[in-house]
Image (cartoon, helix red, strand yellow):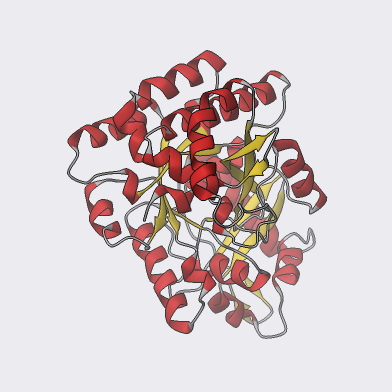
Amino acid sequence: MDDVTRRKSDKNPSEDIPSPLPGAEPEAADYVVSHLEEAIEKGWIRVFYQPLIRSISGELCGMEALARWDDPERGLLTPAVFIPPLEKKQKIWKLDLCVIRQAVEELAGRKSSGKPMIPVSINLSRSDFLCCDIFREIEDIVRRNGVDWSLIHIEMTESAVNPDAEAEFKTLDRFKEAGYELWMDDFGRGCSSLNLLKEYAFDVLKLDMEFLRRETKRSRSIVQSIIRMNKGIGHQVLSEGVENREQVEFLRKSGCDMLQGYYFGCPMPLEKMLDCCAARGIAIESRKQRACWSALRNIDFLMDVPLALLVCENKTFRLPFVSDRAMDLLGEDTTREELEKWINDPQDTAGAELFRAVESAIRTGDSGEICCSRGDRPL
């Protein structure tokens, strides 16, 4: 797969952006190539963001930076118009650096204003590695703006990395050693995905949206198998192309860590994207929460034994996940909300015992077991 598809705004063909007129492609391509430097200098290249959602909490855990060309004469150009000719002429690295610079500067602006910081994933292409020292370029931008490296995620498709190119792997190593996360996009689409996965340890794998677009029982089984495999080797998994609540629930129960798609929002300017998330009750994940959820990357949510996750904040328990197997033990008439209410009941000794056990684990760092019951059902 090439890098063109990767930049098509979550690859949703229904995106409400005008397309080029039939037959206008060659002329439009020439225009894009000859006006790139002017577009960068005059601010015609804009960055839109698509939200990334933590599946287990429903909170905003990141965003993907995507390029838009807002031309004063031709209007808003789609990525399909300007990405291919820039790739062909090996000028895409200039566009990528423009996007990276804007994204990092917007993060720096939030930092100086005391606003919550949100990690951003940025896309790299093959020519970024060939036409410049991409690591040094990004390092200079990040250092100059005083942004934490952990907030920048380097995202690439397998077509951007040549498994036989030692220099590219050395560049990836430089990113990792500096503290950046490395993400592999569109996992499962290319024929060499597993081979690349064998050669390099990425932090996050983004499942190709085609797994959800053409849903079948077989495709869902494949998705679950991919999630289990990657959790076994310590990767987080993000699924793109999420378009409905049913998909959200399936991926959450399967242990998929993060979600992206038009169900949560299309690519938009930063403040508009944040306003849309706030209007839907989607809070911004804190750094502490991020560390907590990232620590769960190895947990197999599809295990046969009953499983539940409890979060204790301000002496109150939240129950973000309970497996179907665990709910079966409690009886068909019990809901997750009822279980959470019971655990937090100050008159119930089981909840008090559980809280004391949590306090002890935090204080000593030790794990342990407790046994309590609800009626005649042991927990």
